[in-house]
Structure formats: C-alpha cells, structure tokens
Length: 335
Ligand SMILES: [Zn+2]
Image (cartoon, rainbow, N blue to C red):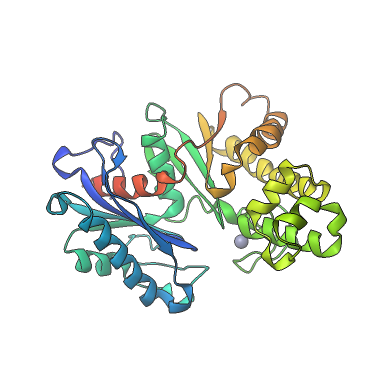
C-alpha cells in the first residue's frame, strides 16, 4: 500500500470519520474530502492517560460515535482514518509505541476501530498524517516535494517526496529525535539531546519553570502569568512572556528555535523540498516564529538552497491532523 502518486479523492467514498489520538487530547470529526472540510462538530476531550490504552480507546470510540451522531447522514460515512501520536508498525495495523501511555505498545488499533464502527479503517503516525493533510489542504497540492515539521507537546514530521508520502522503511520523519545537541538534555525517548528535548512544548515549559525558580526578576511576565508558581508554567506562558520581552524567556525561546533552525536547514540540504511547513500548537505564536525563526533559517541555509525553498507556518490551525487522517482512506494499493 502506498499513496497513489497522483492522489485523487474517490467521490463515492469522500465522507470519512477522522480520529486523532494525541498525547494530551483526543479529537473526532466527519470530514468531507470532496469539499476539503470538517462537516460535523469536532468532538474533543483530554486523553485519559491514567486509564491506559483501553480507557483511551473507549473514550475515542465514544468521541467518534458522538461525531457521527451529530452529522446529518452518518450512514454515508464510508471509512475511518486514524492519526496516532507515536510510531506505528510497518503495515500500519498496530501501535509500536506511545511515549505518553505505556500499554499502547503492540495494540491492534486498526482492527479495534474497524470492529467498533463496522467500517474499514486506516492508520498512520501523526507526523505523516499532518504532512499529508498540509500538502493536500494547506495550499501546496501543486508541489511535488514538501517537508512538514510538527511542534506541539512533542515533535514529529513527515515528507511528501515525488507526490508520495515517504515512509522510508516505516519510521521516516521521526524528526523529534533528530540529534541536535550530543549529551544535551534528557529526551522522552531515553536518549539525550534530541530536538524534542530542547524545542517542544514540554521542553520549553521545563526551561520556563527552571528560569522562574532560579530568578523571578528575570521573567516578570512569566511570574505574573503563572502566579509565581513554577509548577504552573506552560510553553504558551513562556511564549507570551517572550512576546513581552522577559529577558529569560526571550533567551529560552531563541535558544530552542536556534536548535530547530539547525534541524530545518539540514533537512532542506537532505531532501531539497520546495517548501518546509511548520505546524503544531507551538507555532501558533506566529509573530515569534516570523521574528526569530524564519531569519535564523534564512541566515543558515546553504546558498544552494536560498531562494528555491520556502519556509512557512501552517495556516490550518491544527485541522491538518483530522484532514490528513481522512485522506489516508484514499490510499490505493500499488498491486
Ligand atoms: Zn528522543
């Protein structure tokens, strides 16, 4: 199975239930691929991490059922597309690992979802799903080569190369674990110095907490936003305090974005994409990305690539995951 080189949407199968299993939240909605729109309310809830994989699966099935129940014509829905926040097996039937809920490992998620909704189901990891959604629905469908970087609680990514989702031998695009600082901070994967350990929602929150605990005078806005409680600091607060020019928060954000820029310029050198798109919750601080990050990439990019590769922030505001999950159902067998 692979994405057809010229992905087309089958109009008889263009209504799809899309499910997004994130590390911190779950989302479900009906997508009309012909219109390129989410056509039901998006049903969201926090991932019930403490209830493990079985509790999370149950919660997602309830979200999906609610999305179908609030859609005018649930009987017209032809398939289920699944985005999973972690690596999946090469045949994309089972979960390999979740860094957030341990007992997902080996779970036959596609079979479980297919049984629950009595519909065919297809799955991929969230980086690949978001790359697909961004390429097709983010205004880049005419391009042959796109790289996508997702920066939210964790970091992931995906590639469209020659108009196909590129999976390597199955794990291509695990950009969160791109090594940017040997012997750097501890990563969620067990190694040290991965990109995710310096530039992700959890890493930026960790650095904000440390800065506030060490010297509140260096981050007065962060102190106010968190009511002077280091344990309450979030990445969004650190970005807010960076916008307000708290010196410590400007330093944290600039340091994190510098590492991200190193990864992105190397990614451009490796794959020669026409565009690199950055998405995910952290990129909602668009002004900061435009002020700090885009110039960092332009300064460090090899002259060969200047002017031939654009770097953009996604405009889909998170919908790329549900839209991309729905697109998985249009995959066609090569045999
Ligand atoms: Zn890692």
